[in-house]
Image (cartoon, rainbow over all chains, first blue to last red; front, top):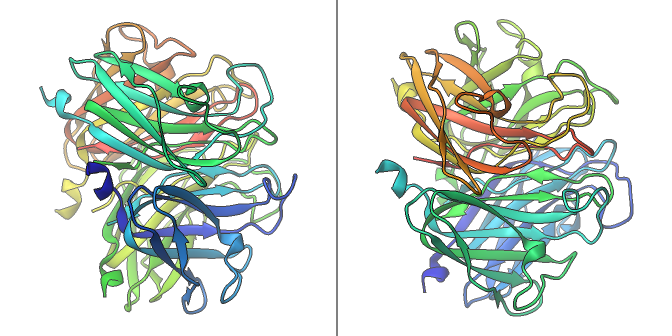
Length: 125
Length: 125
Length: 125
Length: 125
């Protein structure tokens, strides 16, 4: 019981950025920003993602799902519907789920010197 | 007194991943995901860990303990009962303690270019 | 509606530091500390930044704006009014916005070995 | 006014670790764990630090101060009273301030491959 109420329905992040270049074997070392979504509940989660840009209006992406009691990683590189996220430009995003989930954000930038980091999400409610 | 009430009993993380390859001296430079558990209270903490996967049901691991007023680091690579966590696959986890503890998560990926990070935990209550 | 109330008006950070040296192509690999500001609301955000130092009084910088439904990245290297932030010295900062925003902090230090990290903000209200 | 009430009096961290080896120029590239303390208030902050270990009782360090409206970085390598923190061993810590402060934790490990990270503090109240 107690486990079901963990998580949030709304998550937001400000510091998105997909680097232009990558080095190393594909796809593990492709530069990317990604989120990991953990759904510990008994119902499938329906996830909507809205991308905010520096110089144009926000874009709403096609709904994604995360099965009950499962983890799913989503690379922003793979979000191409309605259109791909431009490389090498800052973006922010807002994620809304119909059930409570846990989301963590991480980045790997292999373009030159492994400017890399891993982090967990801060902004939710 | 005030110190005893710090911490949480439930912790959750979404972005677990144990890399397939390592470089450097063992075991310090083995690629790993790990958690550090700080128990500042007067009672031993009993910790249960549930691992969530991308493609199968969650797995409950054997109970671990952290002594009173002690720190303990736990590598996910070392969790092998009932079975090891698959390498190179995403996982999430839920940690439940019988007393309040502090937990932080960190990763070292030495497989190619030190895609590495250190972070502290966000999700708790 | 629900989206408009996400975020905070006050943000603070303790671990600012602009490295003295950089390697790699300018400006992507210039060592820097930066913040990403996400304004998901319908009103332009007016942002004031106060820098705290180790050895002298705090400095208030010129007001910045972030347009409605936009992301903006701000490098501390670029804050030069009333004066640049000294290189290689610790600083902290306080950011106050007239509307609710999301702020994340990140660092890239390319001076020697890519002592680098990416992180999200913790301190807000 | 609003600025004075930002921060917490109690901070705790679980994942402390000072690497055994360093590479690069001293002291900037000495491997270290450190905290940055931001005191935005009008009163000097008196900070007590208690270190928790894996295999022995906690140790209380000599009181430190952070001046009003100032930032101060503290390397755990420099904590030597009553005794230095052992290298290459896990430790946790509890920090108690008499006034509200902001604390962030960061690590630089230059011992082999720049297993490095930067992060902000999670656990407070």
